[in-house]
Amino acid sequence: MTLNLAHFLVLSGVIFAIGVIGVIIRRNAIIILMSIELMLNAANLALVAFSAYMQDVSGQIFVFFVITVAAAEAAVGLALIVVLFRNRKSVDVDDFNLMKW
Amino acid sequence: MQLILFIIFAVMTIAGAILVISMRSPVSSAIALIFVLFAIAGLFALVGALFIAALQIIVYAGAIMVLFLFIIMLLNLREELISREEKRFSRILGTALGIGFLFEIGLFVRRGLSEGSRALYSQLPYNPSSIEQTSEGLFTRYLFAFEITSILLLVAIVGAIMLARDKDRTER
Image (cartoon, rainbow over all chains, first blue to last red; front, side, top):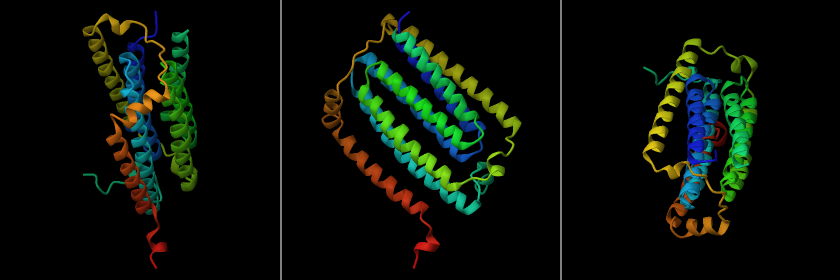
């Protein structure tokens, strides 16, 4: 048995699913952001595996862009959390119920 | 050899990812996430994406995670704020949904691989792409996207500052 594309795709799916579970079950906004980073990394892993399989560097360049977008997302997301914490003295997403129902 | 390294990194990644979503304190989660990012960088290096592996460590494990830790320290959450009892129902439902989702992904991967050629099961080559190859694509075919990225980062910086500044203190 040798290392093939299926290994990477399955691992990528597992990491993505763990990220989804984290977003659903955790109530701490910072940990939800970290779970989103996990999902972005799962996508990166699949892109790099396809890039190696296709012998094309385009996949790696896409990963470069995904990392840039993740950096921007983390900066804005954490700024939002800081503002929410300043207003509500909490980072628990159950406390931010103004827009629910 | 490649497969053994893959298994080591995969186990590290999955164990770390489970720790990220199950740790009580955000600082422990952040440390576990740094661990995951290093393991994924190892997986990138394993198939020859050396530039991306370096980028993963420098930008992700370095810059982004420092930002996370910095915010966690800045907010300085009290014990009662982080250790609130999570709702049992949502935890069970979330895990069930996540496992269902994983099953669905597995089904698609399986179908995609069985419909594709058998070559999909041949060995992934270790074919290190040099930084010249990567940057050549980046500055020729994807030059426009690369330039747009700088605007994205500028917007993110301005947005983050606009959001997080203390209005009462800065308005004179």
